[in-house]
Image (tube, rainbow, N blue to C red; front, side, top):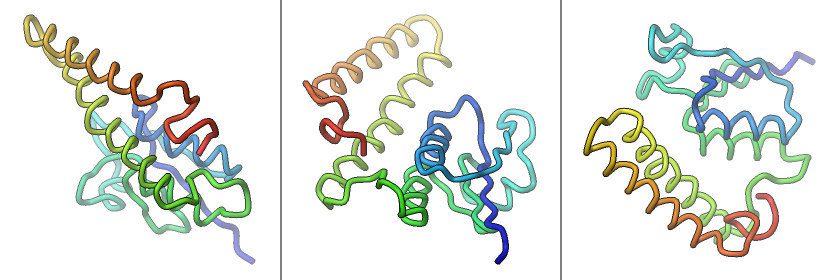
Length: 153
């Protein structure tokens, strides 16, 4: 039987890569991490593995690329299904979790990036917007431990 090869094309600063790393660790999947330099020359492997977006994370499972963090997490959950599921089994709860993951990617990350890249009055507006988004997240969390309820998943 041949050895299963799992490689994660990664960037230490990416919250999206963190999703994939957490999923691999939670499932106990042995893997190799390959750090990508997103600002000074992406590897040929990354460009070949994700030619459309040219972004990380990319999970390579026996040489086959899986891109986009929520897709990677879903793939990991399905392929290594013998341990506790990462994602909710209830379709509604799973859809809600996907909503919050998407919200984070579109709202929180973009607002944070706006703070890092803006100056002057634009930076102050970005900070205000970011705090409003955090207030929305806090309201949605309520008294739950996780956005999906009181249990991880």
